[in-house]
Amino acid sequence: MTKSNTDTVSSKTAEGNSSQVAPLLRFFGDTRSELGKIVWPKREQLFNESAAVLLMVVVSSTFVYLINQLFGWIALQVFR
Image (cartoon, rainbow, N blue to C red; front, top):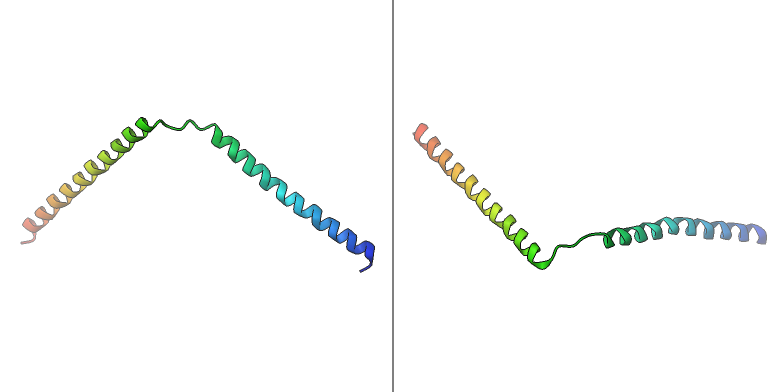
């Protein structure tokens, strides 16, 4: 390659890198902008909703456990 060809190749490489970086920078800028629009819950609301979720998990798992025990008991009565 001659000197001018080398300069052309390196300038094309530099242009290629900047064209690849620009969308990435725009993506992170847009992401930061969208995160700024979020309305984050207050501490009290966070604790109340977390407690409600945990309570529902405990109630649901207890219900499934009891139904499982009932079906197990029925199966023992039938297959004895």
